[in-house]
Image (cartoon, rainbow over all chains, first blue to last red; front, top):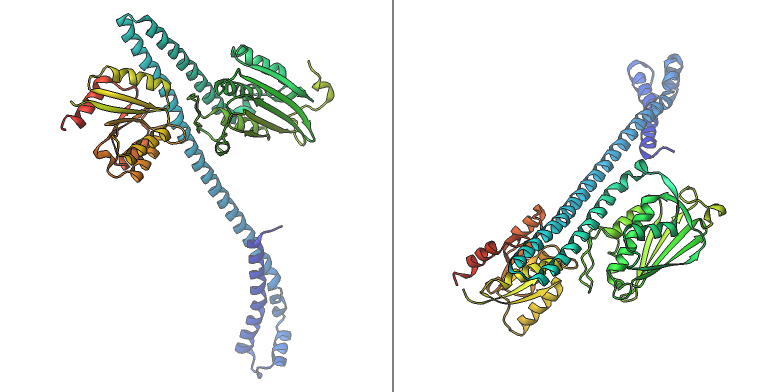
Length: 330
Length: 135
């Protein structure tokens, strides 16, 4: 269906086409008709000059001509609006890159600065022969470098999201096994207890980085923001046309007023534990889940832990393997 | 140099640990209070203002903090207390000076220095001397 521009131009052409023969005949009659200017004389004049019949086709001809002009203008306007949209997207992208650059340079420099500050303290107290203080500082230094590694890992993962579909293949991923692997690789097994409650399914066909990054972020958050012995439960629920993953922890939770900011990039929420984050982890989770058409949400009350719900579509996509055989535990 | 009272406002536990240790070595430092978020520090300052108690002589204020950053803290102080800079000097601290931060620094009136972290002892003493030796 053509839009207003084409219709408008076609109508203009048609109206001009209607006016054209009337004006042409009137001029003709005025210039070449010696009889009195009556309806009969006009009809006679038309009959004596057959070219007037051709002129009566003008509404159709001009209608068509203007229709094509309208179509061309419409296409040009569409191209123009597409270019404008691309331009706005590019400006947004530049802004995002600028923000990304600001945070990445700040966070990486913080790691280096903290390491350099602590190294200078090690030297000072080593010269003084204060071994206890040196050990205390080295412990902090170890934490700083660990945080630095996490920061670099988050930023690198964030940078890879846009190229996931080109660089990675979706593979059959067993969620419980993947969670176990995340704990092993990152040496977190002794720091958290994770149990699976409801298990309607176990296997998804997704980018392996997705499951690994999502659970690594959930788990490290649970460990970091916790005053109890960190633990979490995972439910794998089969919904109609979707698969739902629920992750609930026993951490310090997030206040209602801060819930809206939870997935925003580079937003670090205040917490009583004075733990430093880079504000990338949960944004990364959201971007990863969104990249395969899924949604992630969270609910929490301060002091009562956090619950994340990931909903992944099954209809019209092959992200998720739904056959019963593949949902059996391997 | 008269004895000076310090506030450190920084969410980084490591940086506070380092800065406190550095200030501990400077003989004119009389007291150091550490705040890990700007909201608590703002409350302390406005409470002192209401009670007409002595404010710190120097605040070492980090730029990037969650909830309320350094520049938002300065705006709040500016709105709530007149001529705060007459009695208290504020040095902004950052890990990396970004042009946005430099622009914000130039626009504001309260902070008188913008320093890189980690603080370097001699540089800090020189800056403090610039502001307090004339008194």
